[in-house]
Length: 238
Length: 123
Image (cartoon, rainbow over all chains, first blue to last red):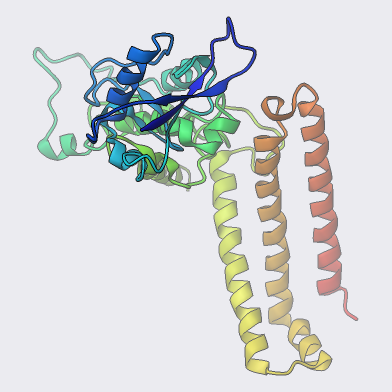
């Protein structure tokens, strides 16, 4: 099969280019990461991030035939129909919108800066109980669909609002994390958290196009979380 | 929290709410006017003038033109802050963006006042 990969080494290349490879998968429907590993055997100058290889660490987020996803849990048949029988090439590019460090590796600083802004940790000023802060099963259920986020950045880097204003718009990942703590019955910083998002950019730059939902490899729904935060802001202000 | 001084409501929630409410007003207005046109079949100048000149339509038109002004201002402000930025067009962006926003604001006000004169000015 044909594989076309975005290559850029700032030390030797004047500009990025696409490099073509021919890989023999033995007709198997491999994961995209397996194909990258086969390419790496041919060309060890290729650089990409990977770790757990099972969709848990979020290291190998990349743009696969135009759609962001985790290489390790994206089978070729799903990446692009026609790739397996050679009708199409597998096209791999770094996550869009973030500066490229080298090849498929991007600088995630802007993404993490936004994550930091939402203060993604439990804030509770009451004295800590001896063992743990308990939650009712119903309260615990409220953070389902939120706590599972692995911060792979597939969602935020597929969002045009994040591309245009990555320093001002928090992006779907950080907003989902923000709601994860707003929805947590043990957290007491609701007012402070909401007050920090009540400007035209931080949250309201979301135009609801749902690219984030379409690409999330964990099947989460940041648009719904953003909607919930908006409702909380509205409830507080009307 | 990001500070913005050129947006309509200086606040994300208020802009968002104004955008939604004005959209509903414009949708209802469109249904009313298109419905009237369809019900009329052939429209004469007298019929159109009579319809637009009645007090209910004068009030509806006022709502409509205020809604258009607010909706356009918020929408175009968003466009300017998406595309007329240093990231997109370089160092001159702030001046260009401010100028574009001023032109949009002034034009919006001109159309708003002009519209009000047309609606309430008689003749």
